[in-house]
Length: 297
Image 1: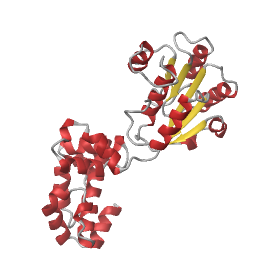
Image 2 (image 1 turned 180 degrees about the vertical axis):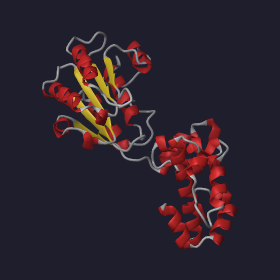
Image 3 (image 1 turned 90 degrees about the vertical axis):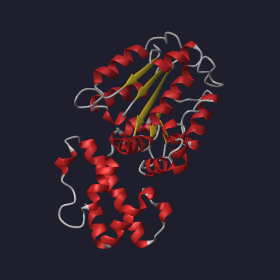
């Protein structure tokens, strides 16, 4: 199979598999959807499928081409990624790839160009890509990956066949996390990380970081003092913006749980069901208006 390691996304996986098996992969594909749901993994698997010596039947994972794709050393696979402080894909990088794909592939049947975070292509770089897509060499496939297609030129989008990816559902995220031995015997932690994952593997990674760093305990302690005065004093959280955002996300889930307890008493819906006593104490002390005020912050 082609996308065995990619959780969920049955429709886009079927769409891409059909294209591969029918030897009908277009010169340009645009993979879109929320950040952190596996689009980049799908692009890599698609590139491997195009370059594998078992094409178009399957991905063997064992031939020299597969091994080189997996190690990032295949001479016919090219990757454009944002660089520098501006995190942009510059025109010189695009022109460098163009020079290579105009030549015959060195080892495979085709060249494959993966453009990660394609929305970070500068205006001149997008125009350079557009010129290639308007008259593509016969032996090249572009795979553009983005969570923000609105920043791409309409003419670039027009030249691509779009494949959409959506958020992962709870069951799909749970299956991903169950493969991790750290969560085999901790159902509470697994449920909590999945609930905070926002339907993406990237979100789940952030939730896991919060779980393992002790941030959840710190945020429960902070929530306990939320009855009056300022709720959050950001300098106490350090200077890392990601830590601050992760802390706010944990707080939002805590007070969402408190609101559920105040209004419905449906404990299966709680993110922190294993900390029911602490949530109940908060629910007894805070009225719904105060909880909503905190959540709006």
